[in-house]
Amino acid sequence: MKIVEDVGAPLVVTAVDILTLETKPEWNEYAAYIMTGIGYLGGWFLGRGLGPISSDFLTKIGIASLPLTARNIYNYVKAQGTVPARASSRMALRPVSRSAAPVSRMYQTEFEQAGAHVF
Image 1 (cartoon, rainbow, N blue to C red):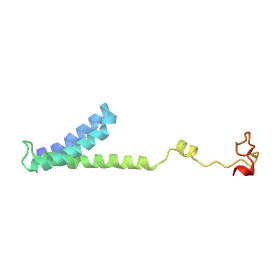
Image 2 (image 1 turned 90 degrees about the vertical axis):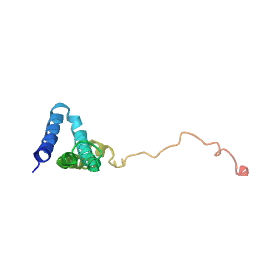
Image 3 (image 1 turned 90 degrees about the horizontal axis):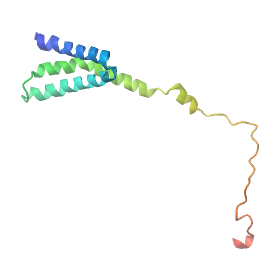
């Protein structure tokens, strides 16, 4: 068991999650996406020998932050599928009033005065 990768990475994810929830809650969703992206992409790039940090540590950060990202995606999709009650009431079809009077024309078109010889 590697203490730094196996325990440190979930602790970093937990600390970032708690800190963003307490200080800037609107950043929490973005922090989860960033941690997952950096974890998986950084682990993939560093696994190819492109950096000094252990690729295992970044990969474990991606793994530990994936449930947060999945929860945020689920909440976003769930919120997009519902229609607010106020919007649905405005868009509802209203029945036509039965006491509506017939429409009377208040104008006369120019062709009504023309005789049959014009056509």
